[in-house]
Image (tube, rainbow, N blue to C red; front, side, top):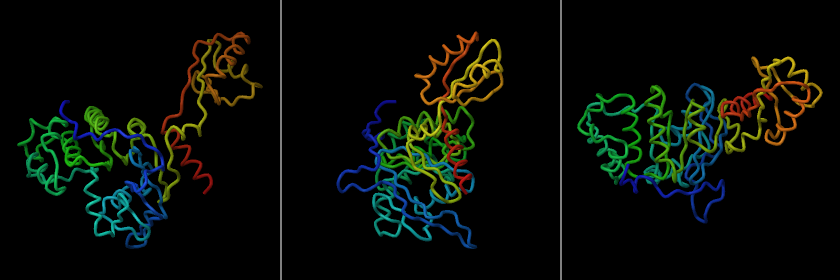
Length: 326
């Protein structure tokens, strides 16, 4: 895909909370509470910031408040209390619209103007933002054969492509992605992921998704919501340190004999089908000694592999720990 220099901003490393002097945080939520009519509280004192260049996922069970939070960030809702800001400008600020123009939004449901052609829709978006390069995004997202087609005639995957093209037409610094692959088949999902990997570097990203594998593949940090509260905001690599890796062991003598040989070694382990899962602190350092012990005990070990925790494991651990404290 050639000629896309203006679509993708120059890469920039995420520096956590360290910001250059006078540089505003792209996305910040400060002590935000949202109560809907009827007294339903969707968010309760939510606070976090997304730093320049950070690619964060917004995770949480159904009803955690994710959709409400995305709508607050886009200005579609106002908080009951607290402050939501883009580049230091709150939704109450007269200049908020200027900040919003620096943000590209890919909604969960395209909700497009069904009778407009692809070209007409992109021109409308460009006019709303005040600038943009339509030929560039058309080429980048493979929309050239569909420019004169009505949006109602596009497939779900093609509509999602158009949503991303529209979000990027003004070359925004920030991307808000609300369930970008929900309802898509595996082929269309993979296609969306491919496009996102090409446009995300150098941008600040907040991805709201139920797909933990998607979040793990595309993001470097996670904000986890539960019952309207933020449980944590950390790098995924840091989260992995919360759960010990597992050594999966199999021997011809079976899991019972493996368990007997492991008893008394000061290790936590469980039976899983035909294998024994041993929880270790440092798999690389501990595996050789453990294998020597098992071989010395007369066991024929034919499998020894390390399983690192997935984002799903981490998510369940964090949510489970929070529920246990409640």
